[in-house]
Length: 323
Image (cartoon, rainbow, N blue to C red; front, side):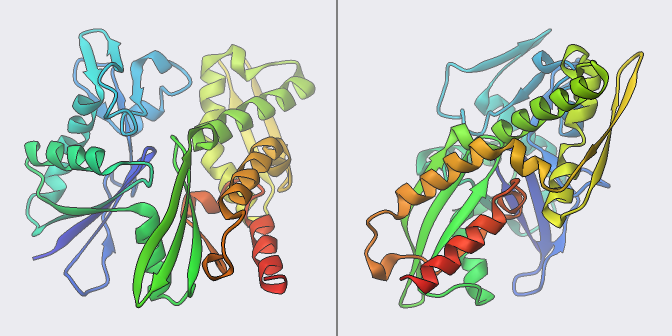
């Protein structure tokens, strides 16, 4: 019997499927897409989980419920549209109900959750899964899971700094190896540096570029702003690979093409970069030599933050040269 592994954060859910001890295979959670966006559309009479919500994120944001994973302990936060009225537990339950058919005929589910999730909140997530008839065997924090995978692949020794990000926050975790066991020495999350802040900055900067070229502002046309927003993941991937990218911005009565150079996203997000590196320096300041990390491990999402990878690599090299 196979196990399902779910990687859950404030942005999306990813899944793998396989027998214990075998190499797992990707589990498409929203075929043909691999990921299930952690957002709900309130537009229709029935709740829709995933991509339908993303298509409304900038066009009709009042019909989108998102950010509820981090709000599970906030009983006052609600989302309302039409006949729908949801709090964070109801929204998370809707996600589990969407996932239940894919987990039904398996030996169980193991899950990772963001580093900013407390033990009490993690227990609440698992309880909501059980109520939706999803058998979750246990959970692990995403930074610790990343550290264990990296250690198994010999990507680090002694100590490592994990950098993770989702829509809610950037998470920094300092993990040390002691007698073959991974110990989390420090774990800090920064909501002001979440992926939502980076995407907002990119949308505003690209909209300003559009104004300079055509005097048309995508932010004045919900359809155009939505079209721009939906291309941000491709822009981040292109920036990571050092490629130029063409963006097409479509409104009801006009169309504009933007050419973005590889270095531009990093320049747009310079202030966010400086804040991130300040938080990293604050975390490492005053650490004893034996706890100073010799490696930095970025999750997939963190590795695509504009302008982050190369400076972090330089930072590690400086640590090695000047311990």
